[in-house]
Image (cartoon, rainbow, N blue to C red):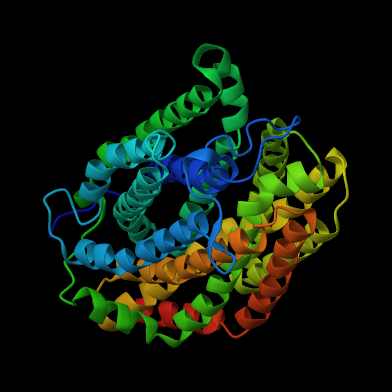
Amino acid sequence: MKQLKPITNKLLWIFALGQFGWSLLSGVVSNWMVYYYTGAPSAQNPNTGIFASGITQNPILFKLTLFGLVLAVGRIFDAITDPLIAGWSDRSDYKGGRRIPFMRVMAIPFALCTIGLFTLPQSGNIAVNDVTLFVLLMVFYLFMTMFCTPYNALIAELGDTQQHRINVSTYISFTFIVGQSISFLLPNLAGALEGSFGQKGGVRMAVAVMATIACIAMLIPAFYIQERDYIDSKPSDTKPFSSLIKTFSNNQFRRFVYSDVIYFFALTLFQTGLAFYETQLMEIEDTYTFLLTATMTFISVCLYLPVNILAKKIGKKQLIITGFFCYSAVFMITTLCGKGLVWGFIIAVTAAIPMAILGILPQACVADVAELTRLETGEDRSGMFFAARTFAFKMGQAIAMVVFTSVTVSGTKQSYRTTALIAFITCFIGACIFFTYNEKAVLKKITSLKGEE
């Protein structure tokens, strides 16, 4: 049997660079597509809706807009492909491993498609633009799934111990929020490039710069990590949807997912509306979004060590529930906020707490359940566990996209407050559901089974 190399924190940090890359691409699309493709420019924020004239804006079914439906269908398509790609990855036996070959192939197309979303749907024919945007978004989500699903499976496989699972979850949480934070620099970078490329050209070039940085970040771990040197992985024999059914038949995993899907519905409502909350409700210029996000990120990172320490002392479950309730408070503050930059800072500071908690610990919970299943069955289906989680929460995200674009079709301040209120109610429900997850039982079984090996 081949002697495996030890997994080190250096290796886990290099692995976490991939999370920075894909979160930057995801942040550009999730945080700014709605902002640039809907709404109308104002004197304070002239870039709002600068691409809106290129696609259909009027509701096409009740209050459902074409853009909202496209985003929702994209998320549903993304969710459906997750178990297919996970099954493919779990069953693969490539020379380079079960996960890394996917990452090497998909990084560049993923980045190029992100650029295309802000560039190609700009012909003089609105119908052509609508179709182009739809196709590009489907391809974007497919490429993201083909990179992220194998990548996420490595969280459990590189997290060979409880300590490593918490460490890798911490590192990728850090690189995730850094990537998301940098994505909020898009208006600032676009403004700096506007003099050379024009208003629309500045936005496109800013997206291209960020996509290039993201692509490099994704390629570094893909080519640095030699998967077979660290992981003794064996292909799974279970077909994709049979594996998905087996995964959801896990009682503890289901309890986790029920709360997770509701949480992501609420969070997606909030993230999609963040630029609008700041520019419409607080009447802040969009160039301040990075300052507020950087503040939130800095405080959140400062909380990583306390979260890490507390997770070991009191367990992940109690902290995750605390994170849910903290986010509920953030959503309620947003619902009631007034004008001025001070409200932005209040929300940024308050949101830093749940961001630190929920950015780290849920992935570790999934890795725990995947590890327990491997020990109980002898079959490693880590990819499917993470894919099943993303399948569920992306369905929540899809519904959130439809709800947000439908509720805010009037563009009034009250409509944006309504989305924040919906986020508050649903996040609170998610917190209550998570009380049913039995972390102690999962960890006790893992300890017991490892002791028998």
